[in-house]
Amino acid sequence: MKYFIPCLFFILISCSDKVTQQDVQNLNGYWDIDKVESVDKTVTEYGANSTIDYYFVNDKNEGYRKKTTLDFSGTYKANNIKDKIVIEDKNGTFIITTTTNLDTWEDAIVNLTPEKLILKNKNGDLFYYNKHEKFNSN
Image (cartoon, rainbow, N blue to C red; front, side, top):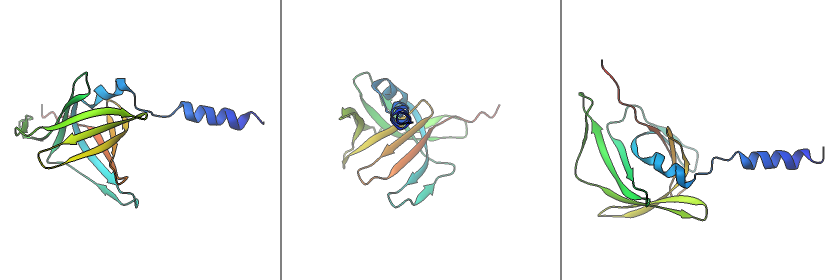
């Protein structure tokens, strides 16, 4: 019994969803925001979204984010505004630094899989995203 608690603790630590460098490439593609959970646990849920975030990251962890819309023909439309992003490993946490013409901010990547993305801003708010899937009318 005296080994049970330390073993359980080790198992829980081993099963953490720590983001790795290989996971960073999962950011490439289109993302729908699902919900935002603020520090005070207020949750804002989003239904069908009119804008979809598109991320591109190269093998040097540099790239851009664009806001896109999906028209009825299933085509993504975007303007020429690209927010510059750089992703850095800071003390074991991958941080996205986003730079626009007006501002610069950082978001921590809490979780990143091919289907799910969770970002945390400096206030501690959590942003939950799902990989966008086009609807097929055929």
